Length: 68
Image 1: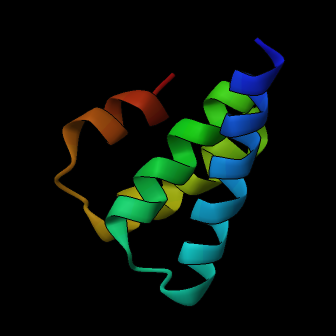
Image 2 (image 1 turned 135 degrees about the vertical axis):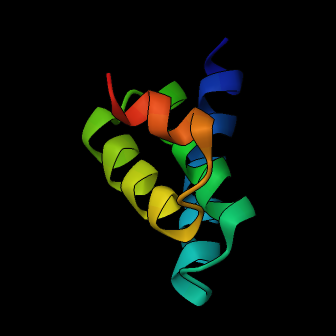
C-alpha cells in the first residue's frame, strides 16, 4: 500500500500547485483538502477548508467539516 500513499502525496502536491496558480479554483481546493486529509496533514486540511469555505460560503459540507 506504499504506492497508494505515494499517490496521495503526489496528488497533494499537484493540487497545491494548481491552487497556487489559481487560488479561487474550487475543484483544486476540494482535491487539496481531500488529499491533505488522506495524507494526515490536519492543519493543512483545515487551512484549505477555510479557503474553500471563503470561495463557496453556501457549501454546507465544508461548513459541517469546519464545525468539527
